[in-house]
Image 1 (cartoon, rainbow over the protein chains, first blue to last red):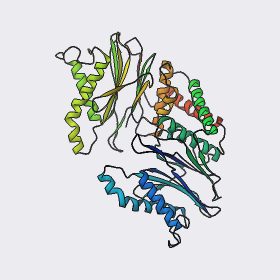
Image 2: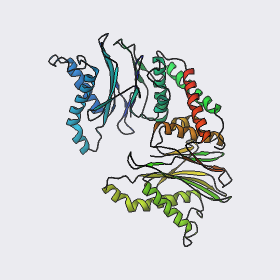
Image 3: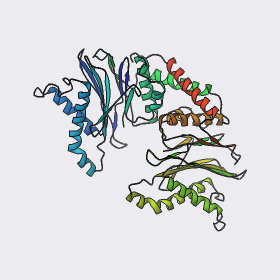
Image 4: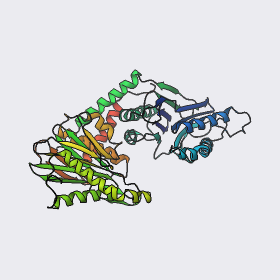
Length: 245
Length: 245
């Protein structure tokens, strides 16, 4: 499994993903699920993937090949697309072509072709946008009402986001909330695992302020995780007792 | 959907269930999912159900008919079974007979027959035990290492249980944790809904100390829910900022 979360805050975009993949329960590996592209000041794009690894890797290869191919028409690759909406369309089209190729044979083998991709970023002159692309190639977008998106094993980490994330959450709090959301998921589901990849894209800069791998022994993440556990336990014991209700 | 949680603490058993059922997204009803039987001082049993409502209602009907039927051999119904293990077996056998009758036709109609039942309680002279019965009629039991079981929409409410529940958690804290676990689920998943049913069975008494319906306007539950939200937000803002990690 996978857990990836993206926040679209007034101050910028925050992306966080884990790196664990598993084929069955006994074949566990580590794969990067976050990919970034940047032409500083002009555009910055981050993508995170969940689901069938062969599918999402193929989508990423197509998108990268299209960037590298000088024959591709202006506007038809991630680095020349005129808008973030077009970027989302390009990801959806790559998803459709890969699904078209493998969906039926995967089904014959009773394997799932399901895959989702989150893509967000900004182009100079455009707004920051954050999309979630489904296996069918269609997509939804984060809005003011729900300024975050999740893919993969999303349930454990949703309560904290529901409680603290609004568009005017400062970016530092957004990072903290994303890390705590991931921490809850890591604790409750073994198929989501360290290390983590994090990217932060402040609004208007078209340049990542941060692209970091957080290793399992990262002292600050562990301190945050421990402090949160302690804070939760303290908050819990401060609640009034409910011998009856 | 459904969310039910059962705790097996040294001090006793705690059961909590919601009451929302849905056939599709647009057909939402309210059904009791918690059932209790008691012969004070001799035995007390609670059951909670999740999954296909026709299946779980049929299982409950069979179990109740067997209790009411004077022809049934001693030991072959919930109220005469010699052990809690036998109680779990009886539930599993009723589940098997219902699945046998409907599984194939449900599959023809592309409906799921999946259902799970949690059953726990105590007989005079025996230990408290808590079981989770699957659709196949087999079952697992809560143990010291994991002294709680969940059925239905279990993920949102798991992090708080993972953090605070151990066998030596006092019963008042167990009630509080079960309610907060339910509260997280209610907030994040519309298909789980108020009112709630709660039962508490203190160890060694074979008599419920509490069997309560908690309505949507229950002032104490709302106060607990609000206090927990506030405590989480406070704990969150007390965390050190993570501008970088």
